[in-house]
Image (cartoon, rainbow, N blue to C red; front, side, top):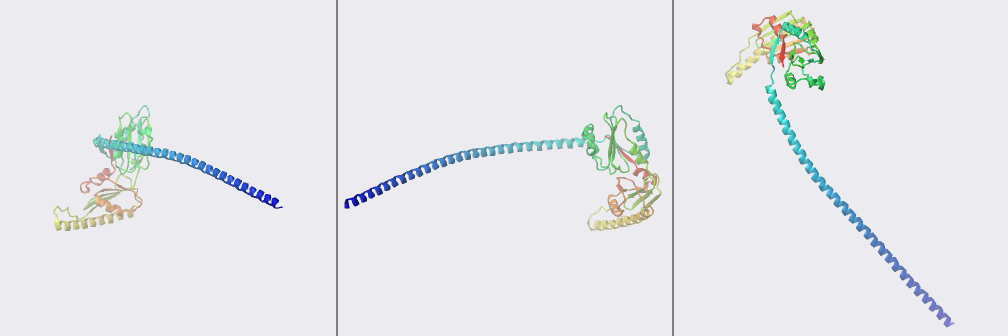
Length: 346
């Protein structure tokens, strides 16, 4: 029994030793496998790191190239800006020089009767093709605003510049022959209502003739310090009402100091008194003639400003430069002068 028990214990000890040995061997393999896995992961991470470094280097190279390209582009842009500014300056200089040399070939004033004769001659002018251009331009309107570029290019730039210079409060009518036999503009006495143009074998003068022949009801004021004129015509032909307003206004003082300031203050008081007299007479005329098509103001700039502020807002007012001196001019001459046209030869 003891031998059997001893053999049994020996067998169990042997089994336990083998199990322990097998267990040890199995743990080592697992460790080696884990080590191999970790090494593989390290290699993979190193490859990823290398790839990331390579991409970073490429991006840095692209960024450096982009900066260089941008700097080059900015340098070229600055060069073009400088070149553009230089050319613009040269162009403006040339324009200024050319505009300074541009002048009307002639300027004249045409009385109402002279305008009728002038338009009659224009009507007799014919061309074999559509070479005659007529343009009606209200005040503040330019050729480029109403005409096609194709037609506009046929009008010489110098003539367009001269036409743009005309600051007529009533607008202008252009008569332009593309063969340059007739190249001129008329500033009528009364406003052009709307822009229009025509290209044909004759000039379109009917609209201007119609405007000049209408029986407009017109109030005319010629304003000067100490002596002003008010006239009303119901038909643009003769005055139905005319009145000369006189008052004492001191002449301008030429000396300095306190005496001049006091004198100028007294002069301003005289002018204000004269304006009040004009307004009083004006109110009477407006009360008797409520239907008025146009009010024409001429004379002293300061007085025009004062009177204009006191006119009803519904009246159409035209300011006209004029050197009419009412004390030396009769009513008919005033009407003829105010309703005259200006002719500009381009």
